[in-house]
Amino acid sequence: MASAPTAYTPQDVSKVDAVKKWLEDRKKSRAWLSKKADIPSGTLSQILSGKYVSSPTRQLNQMLSVLDVEADRLKDGTPGYVRGSVHKLMVVVCDRTRKHQNFGVITGYVGVGKSRFCAEYHETNPMTLLVEVSPNMTPGVLMTELLEQLNNAVPAGLDRKFRELVRVLKGTNYLIVADEAEKMSSSALEHLRRLRDMAMVGVVLVGTEKLTSLIKPQHGQFDQVRSRVGMWPETIQCISRDDADDMVRAALADAGELSDDVLDTLWAYCDGSARVLNENLIPAVRDYGMGSLPLSSRMIETIAASVLFMSKPRVEVTK
Image (tube, rainbow, N blue to C red):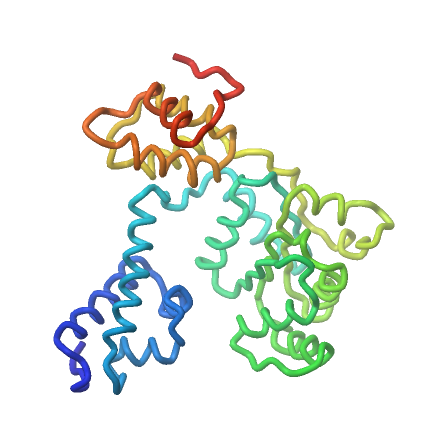
């Protein structure tokens, strides 16, 4: 920080530098921190730019507290994103749907990593709009969300919102990804279909197998959506064994070389669920199994039973 107003103490300046370095190292935006820390984006930007006229100590402490929690979360076992079989399938659907400006549908069982993919794709692919669908999302809420992501003024009235979206999106290379699309109201889904027709942008619907029963029937309520689908792979039922091993190795890299027994046991307990593996098993292993003793199959079984209260896997672990 080149210079600072007199309201900044030397400690404040050091904190500003620490926050900016954390964001830069982890490729996180100020908008992300603004939301996490519940600090208005304009205020946060002024503070980090050294232009805040009042003492920034309280807000800086708030930011650093958030970043400490995020760092702990990463340290405690949230793995880096692994581009495995689920990722590869979903990226093909998204890329082709963007190219051909039609509909794509991706369905998968709970826990296979659909939402994580959507967030990763949104972050790494410019001109991607991600809608995280809320229960019974209405057309007005849907279009407001899209317009705000486009940094566009949101006009009053449903029809004006729709026509503004058509105007802004038409002729662009945008892709709209709707996660948990089965929760969207029928009216919102119909507006999304009409938006695609008039603006000619790709739309990918992502959801559980319930999405299939909603759209698949011929001559059903959403027949016009179904008829526009260019790619619709079979429902993803689980991650692959290779995916699971890669996730474990990435998350537990500091444990050194992992034995086949350890990988076998974690695979058996996760039962093909990326969520169970990443959000339950791996954090518990880091909290209760990482230490002076090497990880073992028996240790993981003990952690699964006594910490996570998990039953023995349906498939017997090979010893």
